[in-house]
Image 1 (tube, helix red, strand yellow):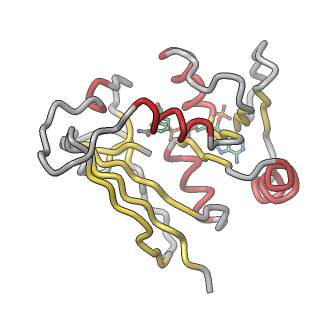
Image 2 (cartoon, protein in one colour):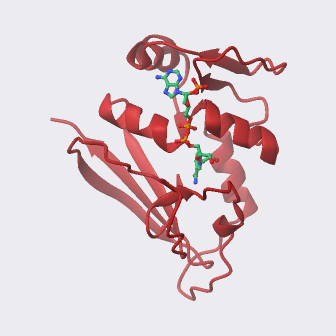
Image 3 (cartoon, rainbow, N blue to C red):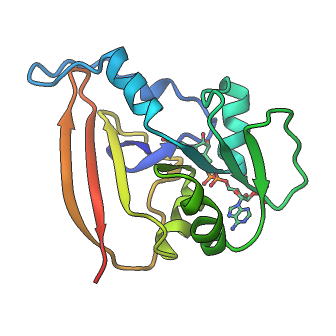
Length: 173
Ligand SMILES: NC(=O)c1ccc[n+]([C@@H]2O[C@H](COP(=O)([O-])OP(=O)(O)OC[C@H]3O[C@@H](n4cnc5c(N)ncnc54)[C@H](OP(=O)(O)O)[C@@H]3O)[C@@H](O)[C@H]2O)c1
């Protein structure tokens, strides 16, 4: 997920302008449209909590025709064939339904769902893109996961706009 340096992934008012950095970091690389497109093409399925889903509907659907699994206990409806709603056991969802069907599954968020996925050891990689800003308040990325996880730093990329992307592999014994 994209986070502020103080660890917030969303502001209380839901605004997202803070994610656009106007910083200048000389040694950083430029995020090209080709790189963004290649990244999007590499994702076979998105998984997200209902609040993230509803926020995406407000901002404009960015997931194209790629399958999207929305976690909710409510009876939500969507006309898109690519959207499925699910309530139930998350281990069963990932291991029995998603893994056999999709190679690269992107857990979009939000924090509530990320916490459940990490606790249940359903996450192989954590990518955190840090924007050069302190938000001071909002929804925390890691809000007391109450579990220790050893990580392996797989990659670090610094961009011209000051964003730093940290990619970690979750190490399992
Ligand atoms: N910065 C980023 O990169 C980033 C990424 C993703 C999201 N966000 C932001 O984060 C905010 C939302 O995060 P959030 O933590 O508040 O909410 P969230 O994780 O997106 O959604 C929480 C909801 O998911 C459903 N849910 C969670 N666990 C479930 C389970 N086991 N089974 C069925 N349903 C389950 C529940 O929905 P019901 O209440 O419907 O039952 C719950 O209220 C939004 O503002 C979004 O834009 C930011």
